[in-house]
Length: 239
Image (cartoon, rainbow, N blue to C red; front, side, top):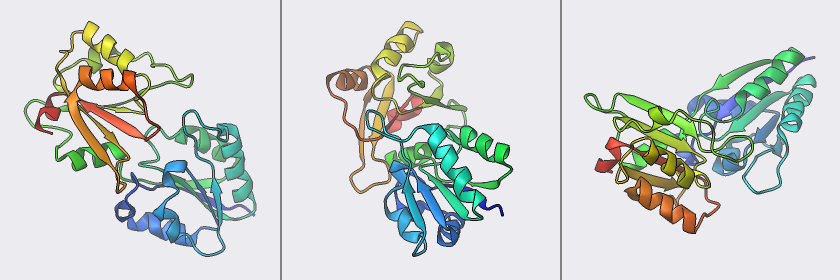
């Protein structure tokens, strides 16, 4: 008896941004394994009696390791359960989706991916800007701010320093000052427009506009534990 796993994107936090398919899967699930950032109103769509299991990871906080999360998915599905793996934003963007899919494939368990609204798109919408521009911002690039050790990844700085691209940095706070130093060394202007969006999709979301240098300086002085994105590039000058 083998169950089925639905990887479901919960969006950035606003329950009104859940897709109809996401709500349908939550209502049908026997178990919901949810990220820390998916622990809010979205869980209200789970059916009464469903197992709700917190498996989220947050920097600097105790959290289950990835192998344990993957094992839980396999164990629940092996009982014949309909399982929702609820991930914040879109499951395919920096959500370790590939590791959980590999575990299911190894165990012969079927799955589907239900996309969600990415926090990058939600942040741009909240700021009132597009993520692309027809004539002079034809490339959008999403990068992570840290690797598995918490350090700045080995990115292509030539690509990230392209002033004609719109760049979104996920999980950026602790490494953004180092990234900005590398970007400036690669030729990006110190006064390149930027914004930092925190708690996107929640009632207390905030958007602070500035330059890459100013935002980096602020983060060197203080780093809160609020989840954030940083967007920079030519488009941000309209934010």
